Amino acid sequence: MLLRDFDFNLPEDLIATHPADPRDSANLLVADRKTGKIIHSHFYDLPNFLQKGDFLVFNSSKVIPARLFGQIGEKNVEVLLVKDDHGIWQAMARPGKRLRLGSEIQFSDGFSAEVVDVIEGVFRLKFNLSSDGFWREVERIGEMPLPPYILKARHEKHDERADVTDYQPIYADKPGSSAAPTAGLHFTSELMRKIEDKGCDIGFVDLHVGLGTFEPIRTKNIEDHKIHSEYFDLPVDLANKLNKAKKEGRRIIAVGTTTVRVLESCQENGILKPKSGETNIYIYPGYKFGFVDAMITNFHTPKSSLLLLVSAFWTREKVIGVYKEAIERGYRFYSYGDGMFIL
Image 1 (spheres, rainbow, N blue to C red):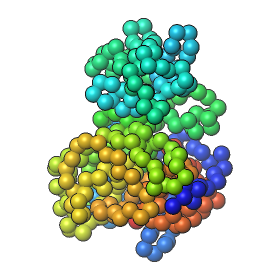
Image 2 (cartoon, rainbow, N blue to C red):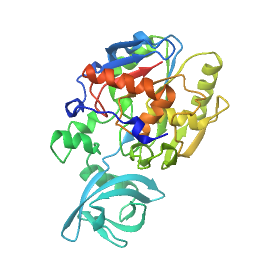
Image 3 (cartoon, rainbow, N blue to C red):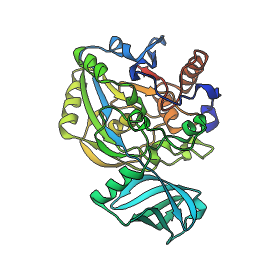
Image 4 (tube, rainbow, N blue to C red):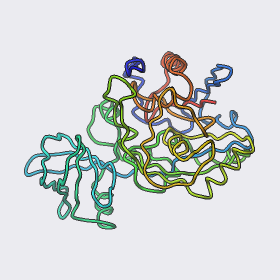
């Protein structure tokens, strides 16, 4: 299957540069896969499309201020922290040509990193600080890792202070992500309460969003793409609760593609196995879902692995068709954009 089949034209003014205010006032497109019915609504109406007994699963990974600005000698360099690998950080950098093995990047007085390896454009950095000292400095000087298309649409380089809270799900509590699990950005405390009042259950997994989620596909054929591994955790008690709900015929609703990947990584013959570790599961059309019954997701970039995952859950033709309808209706796209509930 060719990557070009998952392309579409999006007017630049539909790229959301800021979230809806309040969060749950974003548009919500509800798509029923069985009937083909499409409903245009708002995110605060989500409980109206839920049933008593539904089990919603969220990704509670927290976005870290992963964008760091430093110097190599007198030359500026921007670093995006991607993944902590036993004290050595995988990172992207620009301009990458300024980084060589042994290069030292000075980020602030007393805070620096050495380039210890480079593999396929991903740099491995060893920082001079660790543990609490490392995190204190990252929190002090780091910026939220907004996607480049948002910065470009804003005509600015840096983030805004509001992004510290805007680009973070309200329930996020486990630091580690280099990009937000964006489907969760629509939820407010009030909306979460209404979902529970509906008689739905709520659970939390973790997947630290990194290259596996946001790296673009560069192969002509989608089958040739390889996903970078990302850390995830599915607790034992949640796996037991979800297995019980599934056995009882209740709907398992994944909030976000990262949650989908956790659940599908842990299922064997329709039964969840509690796990912690790394996953590089790559879901594209032809994949047979074993556990997820419905998903809540944003509108994704053309030719992305996220769009492929959503297309696998429905069909390429249906998803692209719905995207075109959303464009015609002025839906806002990407990380800060509107949402879709696929039943």
